[in-house]
Length: 256
Ligand SMILES: Nc1ncnc2c1ncn2[C@@H]1O[C@H](COP(=O)(O)OP(=O)(O)OP(=O)(O)O)[C@@H](O)[C@H]1O
Image 1: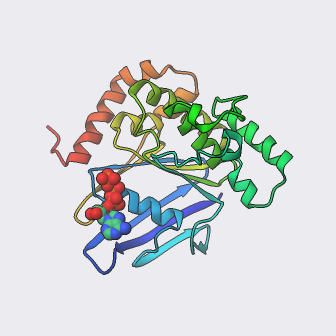
Image 2: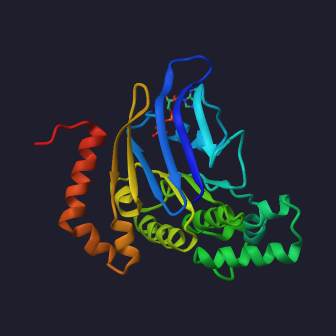
């Protein structure tokens, strides 16, 4: 099974103080790993290492057994800012990667339409980007990431700019897409409930220097995909207990 590995990573930018110290993290196909932690603990740096945008000061980033030397089509990235091209149509945005890969117009359109259907925007391919809502634009960003059939999907606060209701709908969509693709998902969020609802594994980081302080296996997302309602899951005693435990870990509170 394909796996992405961060092995004993340390990172300093430009010879400065260490931002990450001895961080090890694995991501396999079919896993949904969510990284949480206070501002500045190095979450985005971790994702940028996995994406190949940043090189570690020491340690190794591997896909299977091969060293990552830069960005690759196997690792798609979705940012908070959807970063769409306003001068291209929705379908052209989705099929931007396939266009760079030299795929012809008809096949590009087929890929775009299929990915738009997966993210719940069937038939919107011809719409200009400026006529989409914020939530729709974020879906297009997700569809674009899916266009390359990535093995790993790396997401940095993808829902952070959305209003609460759109965000909840997008959480459901992410679960659905994860369930269909069985890619390995790595997501950074400041939302504790979001982390619990989506993850198969939650990784808690702490700053000074950035490091992993706790790892938590959860199955609320799997329960949702098995048909339990989101409301029932979030109101359940085990969800509430897991939320408290996660908050303790993030804010280093002692258990009462
Ligand atoms: N390109 C860079 N050059 C120098 N320092 C950087 C760079 N990127 C991040 N840093 C520093 O590294 C530390 C970790 O930043 P990072 O963005 O990885 O944390 P984060 O946990 O994602 O933060 P937030 O939750 O606020 O987004 C911070 O002190 C930040 O100022």
